[in-house]
Image (cartoon, rainbow, N blue to C red):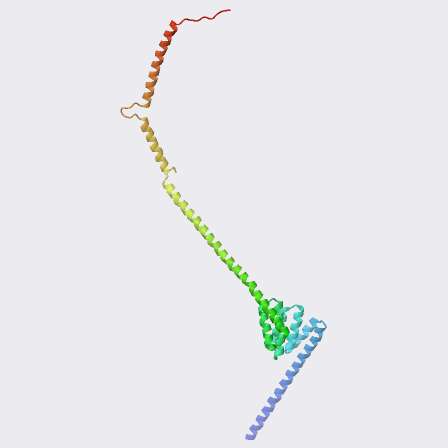
Length: 275
């Protein structure tokens, strides 16, 4: 019984080992096929056959998505064509699946160059920094890192005045709103004051709309005139004085007429000469 169990365990071990070898062969075959597609794509790319090369690179990545060379080289072709979005995606894919420092360095270096083309200097600085972590001795990467860092500082300085301007505009808007509110409050106060003056004016007017003060003034002046017209006790009225003066003038005129008549009678008359 013991020997029987040993035979079974031995058989299982042999079966598993054979299965592992079969899987290794399948993976190896898949890897070689992907490499062949990449090699064919490289040849087409060197001959400026971009569309055909792109198709072969995609075939390689469909068979082996972690194929670093396929993603990296396809990204390089996109970069040459100015398709920075696809180029960035493929280089990020290569950096993720890279297994060596050299592969990571190249992928991050290219990522930095793509980001610089899109004026994303801060992100490019980080990409070049990652590239240098994997290969600190690369002069080109160090140079590009310095450029990206300087570019990021300039962009930071350019953004600061813009933020200040925006803050100033916000403060200006607040001041304008404050002035507008003050203006509206002043107008409302004027309207309220006008309403109060109107109410006071209405109270000073009678039912006909005439000012009470004016009527009272006119009434007082009328009373004073009437009082002046009426003779005071022991005094003559203006009309009586006028009649008395007229009578005196008439009497004086009669006396003067008599005196003149007497002068005419006693005087010599002068005659005119006839020729």
